[in-house]
Image 1 (tube, rainbow, N blue to C red):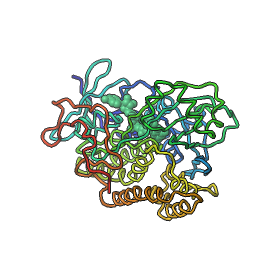
Image 2 (image 1 turned 90 degrees about the vertical axis):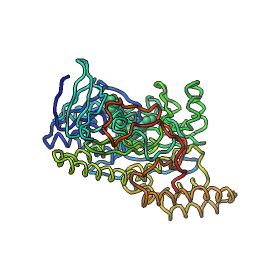
Image 3 (image 1 turned 30 degrees about the horizontal axis):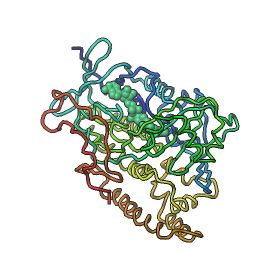
Image 4 (image 1 turned 45 degrees about the horizontal axis):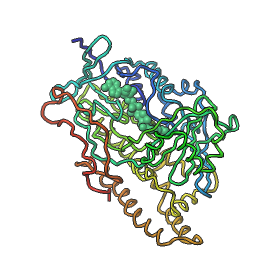
Length: 486
Ligand SMILES: Cc1cc2nc3c(=O)[nH]c(=O)nc-3n(C[C@H](O)[C@H](O)[C@H](O)COP(=O)(O)OP(=O)(O)OC[C@H]3O[C@@H](n4cnc5c(N)ncnc54)[C@H](O)[C@@H]3O)c2cc1C
């Protein structure tokens, strides 16, 4: 069998893989990125990036190429829910004050170009099948391209191969140590914006009767992505009767109907309910899991690509300085993983709460109303990660919302107190979780929603397991963990 030796091998050439490759290659290391896809290649995702994520494209040298595709730049976030209407300007990061939404086939091809421009070698149509071990350390991968099988040996193996990560299975990290089931499914389609050049430069959220619909100006300008994050149970009905369900969605949501109801060029509908959130152990001797391979949160947060890009970059930066000292490298990888968890945990919990498909309650509506006012960044900071969600939706704000809800004419006070009795333990549990149980719980824990699954487990080839310490991954334990975080 052919064998090559490089410094780093990265499996997966989209957000996390290319972002990790760039700093390593810029530091002068020989980096090979392998992907079974041939780019341009699409993937299941709705692809909005708020300014905090767009800046990552600039860091890796991809922003110029992305802007050349001509995406709309959205500087505002608007939310409409019953009689609550708010509009905020996004916070600026490194001079970037706009969100974009570029189809993945176009976006990811630019990311691949950026990795190549930084000096990484990207090999397409190459499937990785196995991790190679030596003395309990990952030392490379076995892969296959059109010319057959070969081995790539490296000081570091990065799995950036998404949720069904073969690398996670190979290193014995397939089963998450923390997870939560999604309650919302995603149905989405492209359409020609009926408002044309008069369309607002905003990401718009329309909420009604449990639906949460995003209108996302996309690429090229004038093309708009519409996403209904609806009850996962309703998704099969969309699949059975696409246009009927679409019309019913518009009828339930008059403001949305006014915004997009006049669209004529409407694309095919795509959908998924496979969105369980999780954390996997994401580093070990000679290996790391970046992006979705290590951690996924409900996409209602719109932060998956941001985190894959940011923590891909930080992984590359952390590893670049320590590649040739295994002990130092493993310590740097562990510190990187801990930093990822500290940064993402608040948003993970927020996604798990937001994935509940219930209609907006009077209490939640009054909390939302506390954000109405000037257009400075407040609620949009949750998407932009300018501060933890718990400080955006702070105890003071929750109390203000509660008082308003209780004082509202005709308020059903018993229902409000009932809701509070459910929400409060969850709020306290989440805050406690951040303080005392943030990193690598020792047993699988179900947080907000039990019954999670990750589809079919990817099983490693028996021969590839490292000797001794790492177990073969098991089937998902589903809801077997303790309930909820508190
Ligand atoms: C429905 C949905 C909507 C979403 N909406 C948003 C959103 O609006 N905004 C946002 O920021 N995030 C969103 N996300 C999340 C976002 O898509 C992911 O977080 C992001 O794609 C993760 O990037 P990644 O590089 O880690 O993995 P991926 O994008 O999954 O890429 C993995 C790559 O690995 C390759 N690969 C896999 N196995 C192998 C193998 N054995 N050998 C070689 N190559 C392999 C694959 O071909 C693929 O190219 C959404 C996700 C979903 C499912």
